[in-house]
Image 1 (tube, one colour):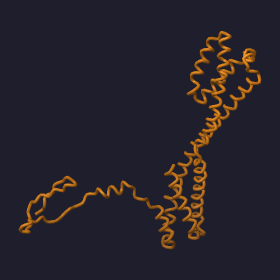
Image 2 (cartoon, helix red, strand yellow; image 1 turned 90 degrees about the vertical axis):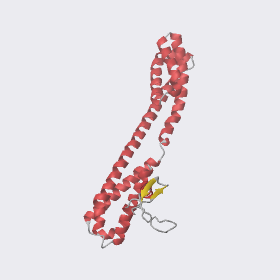
Image 3 (cartoon, rainbow, N blue to C red; image 1 turned 60 degrees about the vertical axis):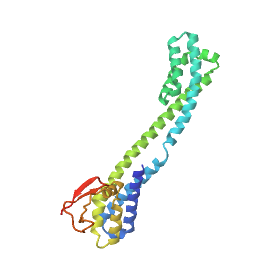
Image 4 (cartoon, rainbow, N blue to C red; image 1 turned 30 degrees about the vertical axis):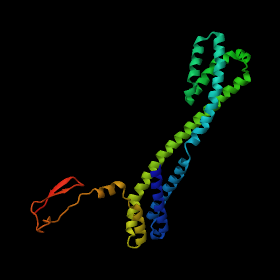
Length: 258
C-alpha cells in the first residue's frame, strides 16, 4: 500500500503542475480533455485509497464481538440440548451435540451458525421438555432471533470484505490507466510546449524522472576500473619490465606492460 500511495502522490503532483500551467493549453480542447481525464482518475484513486485507509479491523471487530457472545449463548443451549437428547434417548443427537461442544472454541463464524441452526431444528419438537429446563418459548424465540441477527452480521462482514478486495483491484486498474495517460498522452503534450513553457517542461520531467535505487548505487560502487602506471626500482629509479603487481583488495594479479 505504501508504494501505491507514493505513486498516487506523484500523480497528484503532476496534476497540480498541469493545473498551474493550464493557460498554456487554452483553446486546445483535446489537451484539456486529457488533463480532465487524468484529474478524474486521480480523484477516484483518492476516494478509494481513503476508504482503504480504515483498518480492516473496523470490518472484522463488530463480527468478532458478536461471535464471542454468540458462542457463549450457543454453549449454554447445547447444554440444554444435551439434556433433552439424553432424556429422549436420542443417541445420535447426543453424539452430535457433544461433538459441537468440543468444536466450539475453534469454530468459525460459519460453523457456529450451522451448529445453532441445526440445534434449533432439533429442539423445536421438544419445547415442553425445554420449558421444564427453564427455556421458555420466549427464551427459545430469542435464541432463534439471535441466530438471524448473527447471520446478518456474518453476511454483511463478508460483503464489506469483498468490497475492499474489489476496491484494491480498482486501484490497480486506475494506477495503470493513469500511467498510460501520462506516458502516451501527457508526456507528448508537454513536449509540444517545451519552447513556449520551459518551466512546465522542466517541472514535469523532473517529476517523471525516476530516483536511483540502492542497486544502481551498488553497481557504481563495485564497477571495474582500469589501473595504469609505471613500476620503478626504488634504488635506480629505472622502470622495471614484467613486474607483477598484486591488488590485495580484489585478490587479482596484474602484469605491467613494460
